[in-house]
Image 1: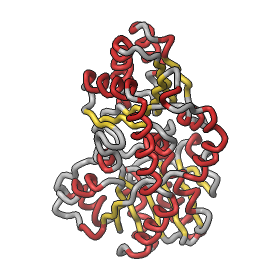
Image 2 (image 1 turned 90 degrees about the horizontal axis):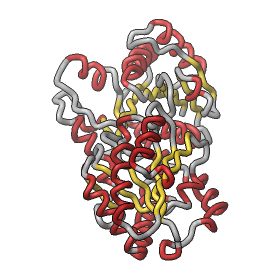
Image 3 (image 1 turned 180 degrees about the vertical axis):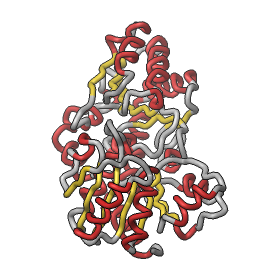
Length: 360
């Protein structure tokens, strides 16, 4: 099968782009996979045939013509747009070329019953791939959506890469009961949505109450990095915080970590969270979007809380810090859950099946 992914992100590298990159790389082992992109940062991370396109707006004639040429040159069977602007562009090109346009949707957003959403998500779309049942249920609230055209397919992770990192660095990870310092890790773009200010304030409250030494490692870059560094300084915890910046390979930090904290205001299903769980972190996450409740079962393989509930977050961190046995058990269960459900080969089989069977 010949597949064309579209990504019109203007700047930055987030979970959506990473999940597409992982999927495209895995699909390319047996299929022809092409990428149309806007940002040089995004394009540079894909080891497949890529085309830089302007993606100016939903009716960008230049991009439409360029996409038609790409479709014909590579005999594309399916277009998979990953952002709303591309949903329309991909739908127009698919209709003109007689191929399928399957939307990639990772956010839980209600669709108003209007002609525009009917056009984008129904008439121009052959199908929609979502990564959580809650997103699917939200879409089905719109009267024009058809149940058969929506498929829940979880984001896959590159277990081969993660296993290689585990083999290389696992000796650096002590068992929880022997670890002298509790390490909490968070990862993502340093913007308001990721809730790192909430995490920093909660961490400060936690270390005031715990007897165990602890550190917080924040992996990522973004527009609020300086603001968060200043907040850590004001809270008097800068000596226990490490801001690594963007890392091409963050896995060494995740392997040596005990707890992974995801404190977003709004989130799809975070690839960083899945990777951290697979690598043996006990996950603590806000209820940010539908996907997280389908992977974390509160109190069994991790903990869930509402965004901004500082007292609950502090209590969870204290409980894990005081109970190394609980921490280790949760870490193991978290890893097993991800290994069972998010294996990339399983995800690929489901995507190819949907691409072949959904109506044109």
